Amino acid sequence: MRLLLNDRFCDRAKPAQGAAQTDYWDSKVPGLGLRVGRGKTWTLLYLQAGTRKRLTFGPYPAISLAEARRRALEAKASIAEGIAPAIASGGDTLRAVAEEYQRRDGAKLRTAADRRGVLERHVYPALGDRPIGEIKRSEIVRLLEQIEDASGPRMAGITLAIIRKIMNWHAMRSDEFRSPIVRGMGPGASRPRDRILSDDEIRRIWSAPDSVFSRLMRFILLTATRRNEAALAQWSEIKGTDWIIPAARYKTAVDHLVPLTPLALSVLPPPTGDFIFTVSGVKPISSMSSSKAAFDQACGVKGWTIHDLRRTARSLLSRAGISADIAERCLGHTLGGVRGTYDRYEYREEKARAFAMLAALVERIVEPTPNVVPLRGG
Image 1 (cartoon, rainbow, N blue to C red):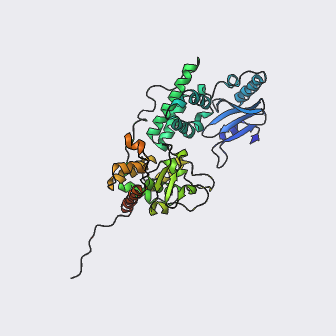
Image 2: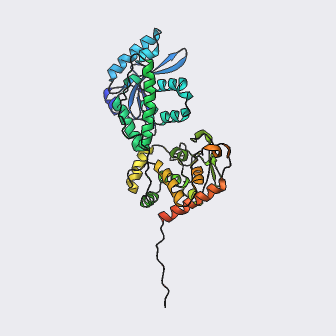
Image 3: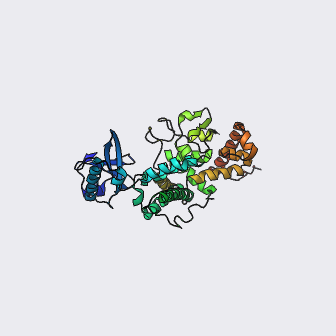
């Protein structure tokens, strides 16, 4: 959207309805834009050798509209004289540094794909377009708090570790950059969670008002899957009563078979598009943080994360008498040793029985039968 930007508009600007972020372009300085998403960032579009590129040079309101226009004009003059854009923009963005780290060092790591997923889901939307040298410690702390609220303290700890690694790597290669991360940031964020929902909490979650989100919560409990594995599910992945999560979006990078019980099939919403859990009919369900906050208010359960449903399902499998080997296969965990290397049998029937016993236990929890024996008349 192009318009003559002013301070009042910049203060009040929000993303367009239904959009995660929106660019508002200044008609006074062509190419200058205010990108509005979780935060507000000044960017400059320019052409180099016929290719359109983007510079990012700071947040609003830390950089005012007048200052942004001045920097944009200086950057355009520098680019016209052939000066490197990174110098004109005030430094590399966090995304650019992270991608260079991934290319040079990160790609050697076994967890490279997992790290990339964390960056794309949690870090890039908030800080990816910011020059790395301008990111403040307080901004990282706020980001970690948001991640902890939405995905739990363990994910916040993982995210902090990844950001720290990237910033330390960049600091070793730069004479000016100093990492804003210090010892003690995110206390307790890396502690493993052990939260398991009680029977009463399961009943409350199960009986929450019907919505796409509430159906997703029930489905995760009944399939013991991770949040995004279920949230991104498509109807084409279900063959009869078997749901096959493709390797491309499964953590262990292999296809994962989940036999669906009648109860799991019954919680699926009516088809309205390619994605199973969708509000728009076009894209999968999003805005997990706000949806969960409203859901917590409706069901009255506090202090839990969506991943706690998977942990609860694993506990219920043991409670239902399922052996540890089969329960771990239901969760898609890779078994170690010779069995994990050579035993490629799908265990489809065993998993089907396990999920059936899980569903039966969930049904008994959400609809308990009174322990009353009627007396016969004399």
